[in-house]
Image (cartoon, rainbow, N blue to C red; front, side):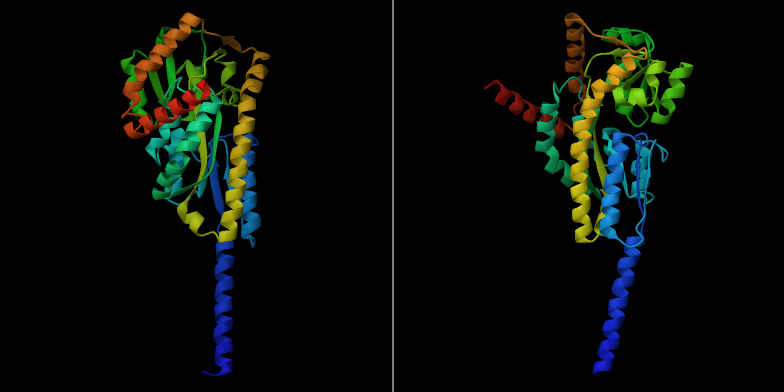
Length: 338
């Protein structure tokens, strides 16, 4: 083979490599979330997308769809599977559509007594959880949370029985939870998140389990202006992207995105927890009524939660994962008592 032929072959290979990398850089990154535009969660998604764009170079473009414009969380998971989205910031409601065991961190009421307990259990379970997501075709870039679920209702309520005369918002994709609620005498109304505000305004529902931040951002509290001061469960979430999109990134881009994801998770956890009380104080100034259960009423809530655990285990949360959560939680509490 002569020298000129080698030069031509080498030139072709360089061109193909350049064309290939330019094509990869041109592929858009599309991510979705239910979080409002310009919220903390939206801004962190923008940070991750900017890190991806800076590392990918070329004509890389991204779009972050906020406010549930791409549908509810079940729909966001579906859109990732068919390639319409490459990533999404989801709560457990959407994440369990990918990997059901994640529900263990959010579906057990009154289990976690502090953020420290949640952090300990999540970090213990994180490697196993991330491995399960990877096996389902998704890479977890960041873990976060959005505050404690509290009950916002049109009428004041303090104890479990007070809510039996009300109609509850319920996630459309949680039939197991709805069946449990019905068997206990409650009335769940399955809806998508975008339907909450008009439904509570028209009377289709009268109580919404929600974080204070979401209740303020969505203006739910203007109609449901009674909040029960009880930390029912944490809203846990994660930023995930498809393994296909991840594998198409160069190693240096993956490193930049991973670093941005870690930072985003830290910021979401730190700032979201502060926003819980800030949101409550802001809503109180605008007419929110905070109802605090008495010690006796709190005993009724704890009894209800304890009675729910056996029904949740194996139905809403895989039994093995349910038991793992309790094992880690008991370890943490035993250590704190020393």
